[in-house]
Length: 306
Image 1 (spheres, rainbow, N blue to C red):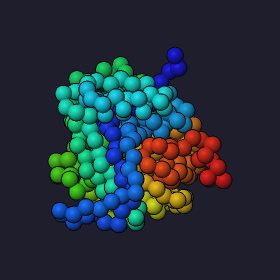
Image 2 (image 1 turned 60 degrees about the horizontal axis):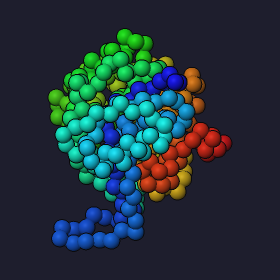
Image 3 (image 1 turned 120 degrees about the horizontal axis):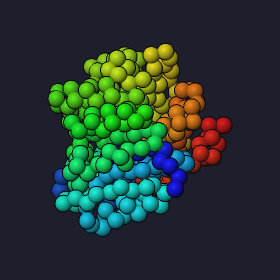
């Protein structure tokens, strides 16, 4: 059996994604959509599918319910050749209703379900293997304070730790931010979006956000700027990488694909600019269809870059 390259811990759910609309309907009214899709989702599960498609042997650790949605999500990961270490919870499998708008913004309605039950007791430390440990959707799964222990174990085994908070920062309390800062002391590569970065640091610009985040412990900050691109920063270098233009259908999961492609490039020991460009291109390509239906392979990514 091929050895594990990446271990992923976090959320897994199903995504119900509508076609683009102009605005939410008013209360007690209805609008019609052209289409909707059912795909598997969850930031951690999306990352696992995307990086497995890129060719790294991936293990996913998460929790589902004993229901049809849980079976659907598992089969989706199996199709992408992800090794699964899944426990069953008492609640139903998590569900996110994703509503994309015509201006390429999005809104989500999420039932966390069994993701909120995922705890330290569900994770056997010996299953954390490979070159990388990726933890995503920090606030949507039940690990919270136990996360630090997982990251410390990974470092004790020489495993690089990557981290994505994956939650709307409007919902963060002061205690949440303190906890994130403690976690970041154990993180090597951090993948915030701009809003998350500003919430953690109180900084205003992308440069200031990254400078403050680097001071908390990570070696690399890969700041996601949505349709503008990304900004990559270390203590020695920093640079902006513009986004690639594609015909966007749905941006759900694009940030998770960015993370996966970035880790792939880091695994290959590429220079940071090449990694950032590769990650931007992968994220752009993922938006051509709903959810995780059209995650790119390596050849497609290089084709877009070239």
